[in-house]
Length: 113
Length: 117
Image (tube, rainbow over all chains, first blue to last red; front, side):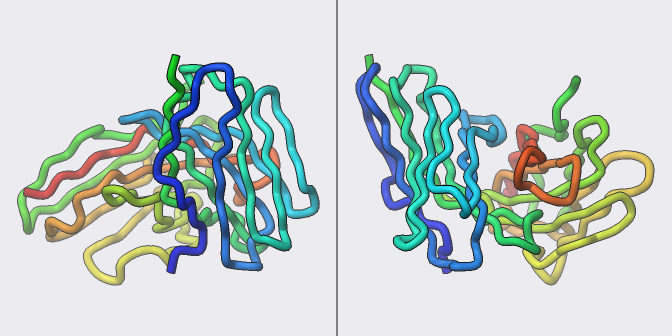
């Protein structure tokens, strides 16, 4: 039962363009969402998060959008840089189980020159 | 300011042996989480511990797996009688409080890659 889904296993974007990574969830109890970035042979690194009381959160080149009615969130990276090439994981938690994150399967982003 | 430290980075065990994975949380963090990543999958929650207490072990397999976080020393994830299906990357994370939301997100270690031969 995959409660957090990232349906695109990979994405290739040209440097300078916008990268859009998508994530869908099924559990309506989720009220906090996070994006993690992961390089090979390293642990995930926190990138940005959003609470369900918001529909947008921005941090520099990274913006996360949340559409609660569609149970969908997306991560926008603009402009994309070669150093952004990594696997991006969407994760979710629910009030009361905030210590437990449910991860998606990840999207591998490649930013080309 | 060292991050979450996991050792060993790589561990090879024969079927039937025991695997011990260690995790030292970030300084000042007393909440530790273990996740497992099977090939081509996302990370799956296993267990949440505070010092000397298991808070949530809902993701732990019922048999062969155990975890502890003693008063002194690192957190240990122990897998007895390993099987090939235990081959995975095991990640430890720590946080300042018992929540991973807001400004107290969990910080992950580099993981231990367990290979069972």
